[in-house]
Image (cartoon, rainbow, N blue to C red; front, side, top):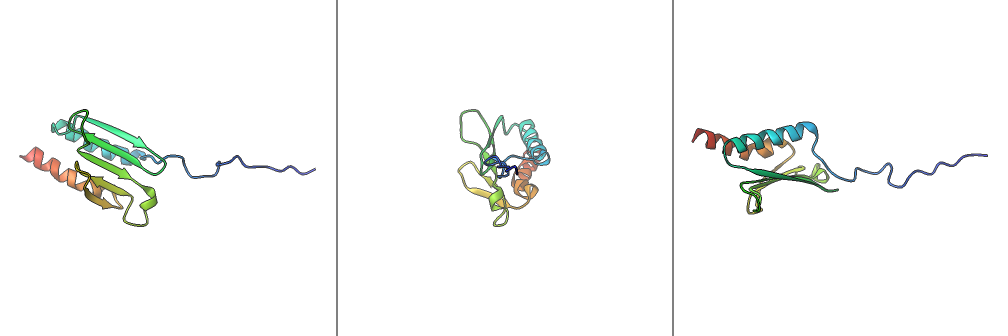
Length: 115
């Protein structure tokens, strides 16, 4: 008698949601903390779906986010999996590297601190 092993449906499938790894989250929250200290941001939200991990930063509660950072691994081989959107929904930066995508916010922080 031979045993037949039937795999559990979806067992070897891709993860059910996209997330930030530890180093990505540390970099994002480091920037968030510095922007809070500069008085620019007061709140944040994160959303994790099967297609994207999203981080939003707000000046005040109950308004549109000042920035929205998205990680979309499906676009890794195309224009890059990272996208930074501005308050009006415009693409501020897109790329393969988190540090380069966050650079517009880093420059803004330097201006805030220096000014």
